[in-house]
Image 1 (cartoon, rainbow, N blue to C red):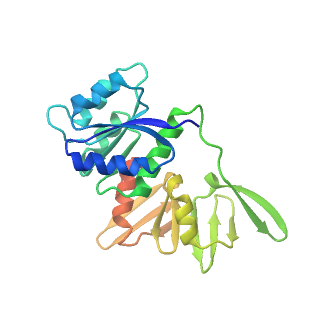
Image 2: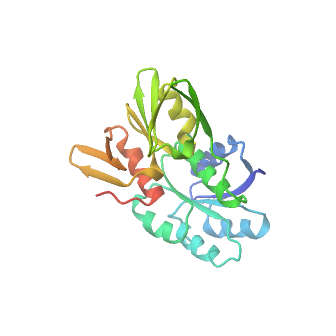
Image 3: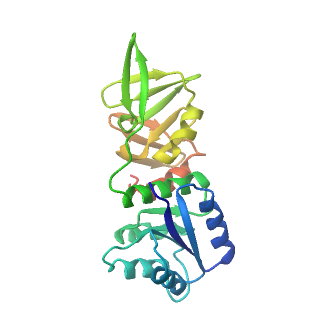
Length: 240
């Protein structure tokens, strides 16, 4: 797949440079055009071939949401990713067909997930799913990663849970977390890694949080809760 060309827009120059620096480290990203205002971002769209915009929401005169409204009228609008410290605008952002909503401070692995979403959107079709080889009772099975709803730590092993069965593989959960983070899997607890697009419910209560995947309720650690909230916004899941 060819690299994507992007515009990074934020009214604070250090924020522009930080985001551009992180994107430069991603091999899927080609040209990066910097803008410190909404008007400059729109000008870049006129001058360059742009696949995606990474926009702050709060900018003087022309906000990131304003830009999204303008380009929504384009015949072939670029993808929009909002990068902001404001959690409250997520619903409106997705109503404007945003591809993702990333909260500041930016984590590199979270930004990598946004790039993946953009790439998947603009290419002809989704990437071929990764296949995991599993030995079960002397029989080798091929399990597609997108069938795995969550993963449970079991010492130096990990148990992969699909809708039909579970499979034990000799790979630590820490390794799977690093390998699968960009594919939409979130470490919600020291013992669990969950596919966010498989989450059916999120339960938040004072001092306690959990997610429901199928018929299984999984605990969410206090440390993972901020990351979960960010993913909820990105996946448009409403907590109960």
